[in-house]
Image 1 (cartoon, helix red, strand yellow):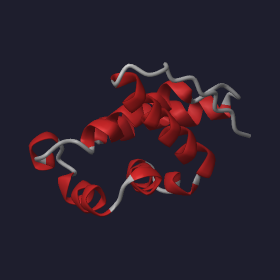
Image 2 (image 1 turned 135 degrees about the vertical axis):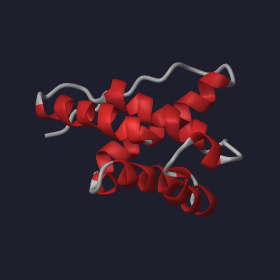
Image 3 (image 1 turned 90 degrees about the horizontal axis):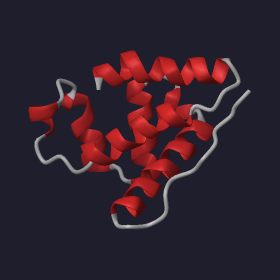
Image 4 (image 1 turned 180 degrees about the horizontal axis):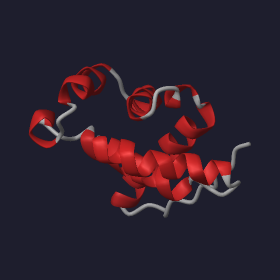
Length: 110
């Protein structure tokens, strides 16, 4: 989680500030959210397991995405447009892993 917080979240903020799409960075977060949700031993893969485990056990869907985004960046869970876009990308990832359509979501905020 620390690498996402330090490397991907700043890209989201910079993209938005520049008026560009944050979709590529949000796709990374969506893929992580999907992956971490399926990990059986979070402590074995992430030093932030103490923060992640209650979220992974107690939430699902957009609520989980919102809570994970809040962990990545305080206030991130309150950014509905980013949470919803990330959740749509996460859902699209599950569809494409089952042979569905490719994700395509443009996210521009002001």
